[in-house]
Image (tube, rainbow, N blue to C red):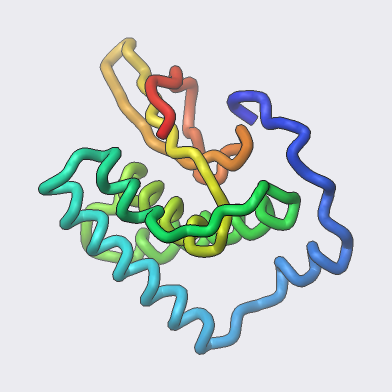
Length: 152
């Protein structure tokens, strides 16, 4: 936990945890991979012409967001792993910011509100990193001791 996650959630039941681990069918995998790649292409194109805030707005638009639950946390973690794995196979740049934008969009479509966090490490050499959090719990790896610069 990076920012001290809240007492968000009733812990999921054993049945809910089992459902969250259920393997996806081949059709579900294909549909999810397509959704990830299409969202990736949109995010990359929009980032060339618009501000980060505008891109996030477009990726989250029309989302009917719900209060966070433990089940949302399980879904978010699973989708985070799938997004990283899927984009990692592409021969294109899929660094932390684009991965985060894709994940925020996928979760918003599923009614899960998240925060995109931009962090920096000023020394010894400047580095920036982006990750996604749900109620303060990191969904994508924070990857080091980054200071929080901005939350969107």
